[in-house]
Length: 147
Image 1 (tube, rainbow, N blue to C red):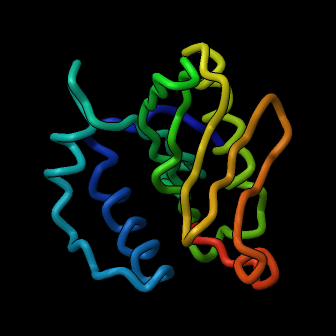
Image 2 (cartoon, rainbow, N blue to C red; image 1 turned 135 degrees about the vertical axis):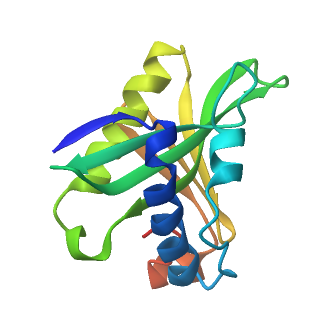
């Protein structure tokens, strides 16, 4: 398996995986059109970066993230918007590999943390440790908005 930055040629497969993610978290189907993904994920003013996991010629997962800066803490962070692994490849460690690649990118950018806000809780990953801030009902149910 190989992890690399997404390219224009990858956007259709990412769009399909994002449809699986939307279904998994009970969001509306975003459709198969990948043009907005390409438009928002490329160029100097892009809205996000995306890393993909490839198994042979197939994209089996992706992590989509954005830069975030907090003036009150003077802290650079990456915000993990989406993490998705193909249904038939889950529990193979691909999500962990993608998270590690996002951590490497965060280190390159001098970020203090990676943050993910989901269903009423925040997950903050700092230098290899994870902090979860959540209402007890979400922690007890192991409720994750990631597939």
